[in-house]
Amino acid sequence: AEEQERGITITSAATTLHWKGHTVNLIDTPGHVDFTVEVERSLRVLDGAVAVFCGVGGVEAQSETVWRQADHYRVPRLCFINKMDRIGADFEMVVSEIRTRLAANPIVMQIPMGSGDDFAGQIDLLARKAYFYDPAEIATTLRVECIPDEYANHAELARHDLIEKAAEYDDDLMAKFIEDEPIEADEVLRALRTGTIHNKCQPVLCGSALRHMGIRPLLDAVVHLLPSPLDMPPVQGAASLTSQEKIIRRSDPDEPFSALVFKITSDQHGDLSFIRVYSGTLLPGTRVLNSTQNIKENITRLWEMHAKQRNRRDDAKAGDIVAVVGLKGSLTGDTLCDTRRPIVLERLEFPEPVITMSIEPRSSADKQRLVEALAVLRREDPSFRYRFDGDTGQTTISGMGELHLEIIRNKLVR
Picture 1: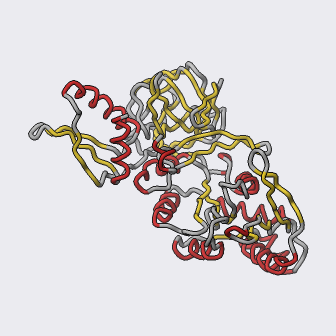
Picture 2: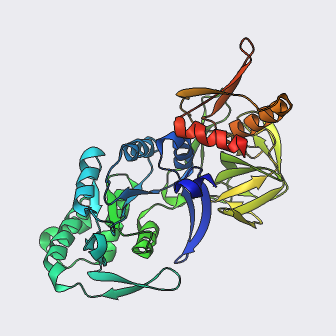
Picture 3: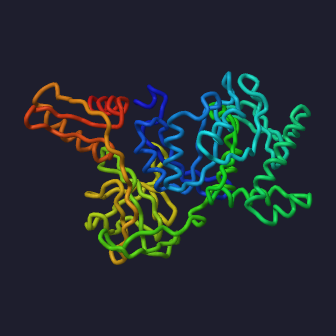
């Protein structure tokens, strides 16, 4: 309800989609800096990200924070410049801000046709095609046509620039580029994929999400350019919390099971724990070890999440993101693994709260219910703290900002 009223994302939501023979686990995270913990824990378990920038606002202060977090977790990224249909949208300005303010290496793969009310679609530089959109009953219909004459010169220059930058990541492509030989789009995509996965460059696309303009080409780019779990280095962990011995687990369903709990939400039927499976296969009814706390847990059910809807799963394999039911003592950042082959994965670091306020229940009868509600919220949100001061009789809550605490207060009231 809070998100609908404010029109912003507050808690990260997960969904699974299938696109051109690939399965994509998508997590939508908030952009607001008060909910930085939601971004932090999502980046920890993702293999790639799409950074969304406003075509008018460009690189905002919180874009910089999130970009630094993605650098910290070495997450490869694409950039999507959204809201190109708003008055004052300026594609070139946003690309130059990404380059200067984020010290990134943006490589433009599409250029917009018009902006504001005149925004008609994009030109795909590699395919030398123009994408137009016709409003349909659901979303839009994509029309692929030849590049209009007025954009032809600009598109050829931009394409030359794109191939020149991509050639830096592939020696064969560089040789062809220097010799001025014909170059196939697939060769450029392969070079760009190498550059993106090694965090050397960030391909840039544009569109308008509200009007469904540019979403299909973006999904194509996700599948072509961002890494699959197999492209990422094997995950590293230790044999136990005190051990220095390093263990490696590959993204393979036949390896011993290991996963990280990255989010907990309370549900009327008990807690739902979101996990990213790094290796092995998990079945419902399995007993697993929480190696961080050295306790054994039972997993009764597996769900594939689609925001609020859920579908039952018979198994979860390496690379999957699923929600599990049955964990009693596990917290965000804990490692779950095979009881016979323990491993402790890198923990999540959460920032300290920066603002505190005191709260009190309307009546003394609500005191116990307040304590229970605070405990639930603390379990869901590791950046939130509460304490009871025996001397003053006050209960104080602490969080990452005024908006954060306001939303926690509203949750308590609701």
